[in-house]
Image (tube, rainbow, N blue to C red):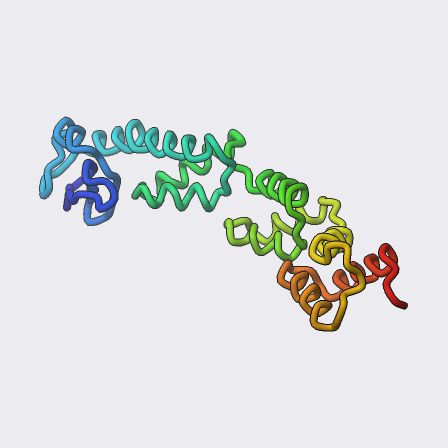
Length: 211
């Protein structure tokens, strides 16, 4: 196996990218490069490269991922992006992802459940807004739809509570401009026209709005 290039990393100048047969293979600190006698333009034993990949690079990538998820739950895409930023090879990244998923360290479905529960508890949002946020985090539409389908949501009730908060007890709105502002606010939150209409009706019933 020919070592075709050894170049310093842009993100970490203490580590060097190793290219084998013209393709990026992994990154090592200089002490490891010297220890394994890797030299640009020279052949390296296949056993040596395999040992480095399985016993040095993979373990470092695994440790990086475990540290990344150690203080906050992450989606598979977020983990994959983090490892790519650290310039691990795609093959190594996929091996680490497989390990994390196998042992439950990475679970997009469970991430979805926890994310939705927390958002609904702390700061209610529409189902549409939640779907957008989860898609931005790399969750597949299939998983999102499945989890949303098993989640009890009261969008009209949440929109009603937003109206209570924004109107500050002054209901009905003093004029059409104020009413439109409240309506547009709920639209920006991702609520549908039907849900907004239902929330306005609930406000009328609760606070004596005009028929």
